[in-house]
Length: 387
Image 1 (spheres, helix red, strand yellow):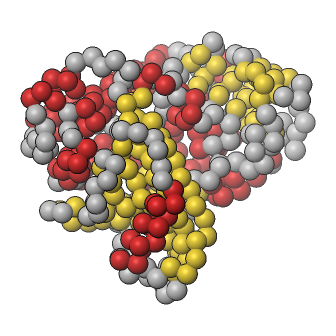
Image 2 (tube, helix red, strand yellow; image 1 turned 60 degrees about the vertical axis):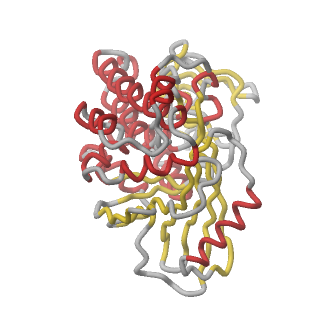
């Protein structure tokens, strides 16, 4: 492992965004010297990141495929008046796989390294100063530390969840993943359960909310998860792992992608889906761009097109959020999602991939109105909102 202090790329934070960037650079610019600076002793934290196979373009399969820990050929969504099977491939990256693959690939690359347990004191356009006094130099610095660094003034609501990875007494090899089971009490806004089989006898069950506030009653939610698992026929023998998150959803574009010459990646830089909270598709676009150009020539026409595309999509989804959280009463938000899942399959996939067309945008706004939507609420959503 290299002990250099001078690199081509300094990647601050060891989460999904910088993991993708590192893998893309090692694939497409194999002689590049890069350093990942991570405050913990492992990369990736404690997460499972999922996305549709459609979000993985051919030029990225080489460096993303090693990160994949799970593949599901189909999934279901369930509402009071709709149950739908989506025969599309759904993929998952775990923190453990991200740590294993990225740390091995970086460690095997000459001139590259991962600094574990490294607290950051200062980040500038050409350097990162660690708390122990070491100064790392880099031609390009990408700061991708967590969602808590997202600018507070753009926050409108929250997607929040608690998930339990549970062991089962009996395997369920034929269980079809449930991305949304909304046939549950609609407390604290729009609520649904998310159930993924990680192995025939090991499942992830999450209780998820689209809510106005960030509070999570974790003890109650853990109990509710176990009750839900029992109701759908999963005989739980123990909890293997727990994860939780409170992700801000925005009413207007936030997250400056460049601050004082430093590229801001991940959630803090706005590389996420404003409505779903999904980060993989947009984070991958940043990684692909950085791997396609010299680190000293990042900010050209291709960068301008990337940012323009992101801002156009984000502007639409921010407007959608204002409708969802400002114009529709919390108890009726479920109907908006049920209407959405009646749309054509390709449109649903473009929505999650933050790649909607003009026709998609019109279809969502001009179609059937969700219950509880009023003219007053619509006007309030369209008017500028103080945050």
